[in-house]
Every structure is written in structure tokens, then in C-alpha cells.
Amino acid sequence: MTAACAGPDPRLRAASIPVPALATDTHFHILGPANRFPYIADREYTPPDALPAQCRKLFDTIGIGRAVIIQPSVYGTDNRCAMDAAQALGIPSRVVVVIPHETPDAEIDRLHAGGARAIRYILAHAGGLPLDTLESAAARASERGWHLQFLLKSTDLVALESRLARLASPFVIDHMGFIKPAEGGPDQPAFKALMRLLDTGRCWVKFSGAYRQSVQSPPYPDLLPFAQAIVSAHPGRILWGSDWPHVAFKGDMPNTTDLFNLLGEWVPDEATRKRILVDNPTALFDF
Image 1 (cartoon, rainbow, N blue to C red):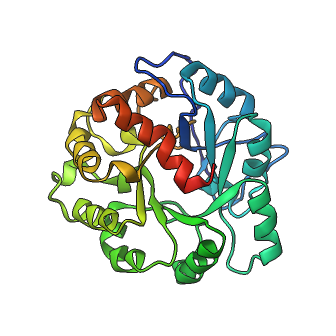
Image 2: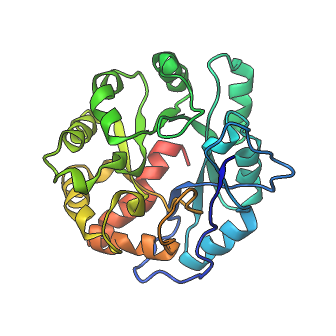
């Protein structure tokens, strides 16, 4: 039996830092209605509905003007919910899909027309795409101007570094590679691997999921040295994501606006924040 997970903090708050026009949330999920978009049987959690109208109300409160919807593991390769949400949100939207290796070109073209721009590999949960399709998926993605996106553990960064560095397409690392400050500072092997991948110029990293990495309370001071190192070296390769509705999290549920406000500490320069929130996603997601 899968574990039921809590819904997001319902409190809506305006941001405490300036929000540029067309600020983009590049990592969140739409879930449900479950009777219309059923979850796969082999899943690790069962979420409550998190619908486009709820999400849009949150975005309007914060000032988010564009969206990138991420296919969650609970839907497997059934991308209908995410693709439907790209139209329902009512703001410019893109989708990161999970598609099997045998997906016909015509279906990929249909997904592209609906806003899809990347293929997701989920290594941190059950049910993701097999890694033996990695190189061929990157080749197909590159043909369309797509990229690959990875939800992986920090140990995977080390194990897969050489393969990722050789991919034919750009690629994105979710949640800062699940770097764990408890396992050491910026000199730890996983973070060094992430920085080397960023050095290639084809890797992007998401400032998202801080509450999943940190062992400290908000504003997660143990993550600050890692964020500062990335901002200093690669401001043009950073994306921001809320990770709403914060599925499968067993700790104190974070407030989504508080997660946005972290950028004020991690990226104190307003022009650099605009680059992260607007310019970088414009380039990567073909807005």
C-alpha cells in the first residue's frame, strides 16, 4: 500500500523580494483529479489533488508569470495530466515529459506542439525510464531542441558524471543534485561532479527542493555555501523551481513563498535573480 502524502501549505503570501515580469517556476507538479488522471499502481506515494486553479492562485500571489510543469513519478509515462495543465493554467507553459524509448516521432511532435520541451529521467523514485536508453533519448531530444532532465541522488552524480558529460543534448539536474550538506561541504565528491558538469556549458541546475536537502530549519543555512558557489561560477546555468505541491515530504511542510524568498539570500543581486527567473528559462525552454 502506498503512503498518502500531505498537501501543500495553503497560506498564500506575496514575495518579500522584487519579482521580475515573466518570472518562471521551472519545477512543480499538477496532480489530479485522480478520477480523471489515475495514478500508476507501482508508485511510492499517493498525493492529494493539486489542480491548475490552485496553482494559478499561488502563482498570481507570488508574481509567477510562466510555468514549467514536471511529470511526476506517480503518472509513469502517462503525460496527459501535465499536458492538459499546460493549457489550463492560462499562462505561457512548458512541460517536461516521461516517454518510453519506443515513442513514435509523430507522438513526440504532438507533445512538442502542446508545450513539451524535455524528457525526464527519474532515478530517485521507482518507475523511471531505464538508463540504457539515455544516449538515444539525448539524441532524439537534441533533434528537436529539447533537453534531458534528471531527478537523481548525489551518488548518481558521481557514478554518471562521464555519461552525462558526453550527452548529445543539454541536461538539467533537479534539486541541486540532492547534495546533502550533512555529507560535507562544497569539497564533497558529488558537488565537485556537479560543478564539473556545469563547466561543460551544457548542464543546468535547479535551485529547488531545499527542504529535501537541508537538515536545518528555514532558511536552510547549510545550503548557502553550495548556492553561493554555483551563483559565483555559473549564474547563466541556474533555474528556480518551487517544487509545489511538495509531494512525499515527511517533515514540516514548507511555505512556497518562503522558498521563493530564499533567492533573496542565495542571490542578493537583483539583476542576477532576473537572469535566473527570466532569461535562463527563456533560453532553455524556448519561451
